[in-house]
Each structure stands twice: as structure tokens, then as C-alpha cells.
Image (cartoon, rainbow, N blue to C red):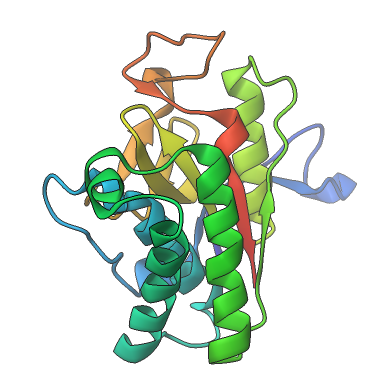
Length: 208
């Protein structure tokens, strides 16, 4: 379920029984399947595609969604949003975090009821929120517990983190991005002028 890319021992050697500290890891399914992509100039769809890709990653070690099941999942997202936003708003402006969180729950509930898949999606708490290092640590802990993390980046684009290295966050992304350099990431209150602004309050982890 998780492929450790690199590990090291801190505070001792293997002879002392010290536990290995994983400094880079990637969800195994991210190496076997490709993310669904929503195409150019359709960032507004990233909210739905991020949840769909997180579900595909989360259940990847056990099974893959069929085309029909993917359609069911995406349709559940559109059904939820259509009751709250116009099609123009969805395609051109996407949705705010509070709506996205509720939509994520609706999509996961659809996966449970219509597809018979046992899933849960939960908020990832980052403390303090004004620390990008705290955000990285929270994401990495979720990955180490085999949980892909969906989040919102600057510009209204939702994406999925599938792994990490000492210098990067590895992505399973609907726009085709593969990674984000940690040095180029910030959060509100900490390096917020960085190229990639990540919103700690948006983090959601998929548990399968």
C-alpha cells in the first residue's frame, strides 16, 4: 500500500533497535494507475476530479474503478454542486472550500451506497495553521497511514498528494502536474507570496 522510497535511522544504529524514520514515501497505487485529467482551462472541475482521484488512489491496492463507477462518482459530485451553483460557476469559478468539503462527503457516501465501497474522507488538522512545516508534517503523516490527501492551491485548483520526498510533495493531479517543490510552497501567514499557496484548512484525507 505504501512504497518507502528512502529511510534512515536516527538516534542510533540498527544494532540499537532504533526505528527507521521514513523521509520519503509514495502510495503504491500512484505508480500503477494514471490520474484522471480534466483538460485545459477547466480548473473549476478540479474539485470533483480531486475527490475522484483520491478515491482511485485510496482503493488502488484492492481494486480499480471501472469506467461506469468513475462516471457514477463524478455524477454524484455534479449532482451535489448543481443544487448549489450554476454550471457557469462550476466551470469557471469552481467552489469554495466549505462547499467542496460537503461535496467530498457526498461523493464518498455515493461510493459507499451505490458502489459498495467502504470509504471515509476526513479533515486533516494542521496546527499551527500559519506554519508551512506543520502543513508538510500533517500531509506526510496521512501518507504514511496510506491516505491520499486532497487540498486546494492558489488559483482555485484542487489536487491530490500521493507521496513526499525531503524536497517535494508528489502529486496525483487532474491537470497533469507531478510534484510541488516545498521551497516554492507557502501558507497564509508563512511564505504566502510563494509560487504555490496551499490552504491548510482545505486538507482532506481519504481512508479506505
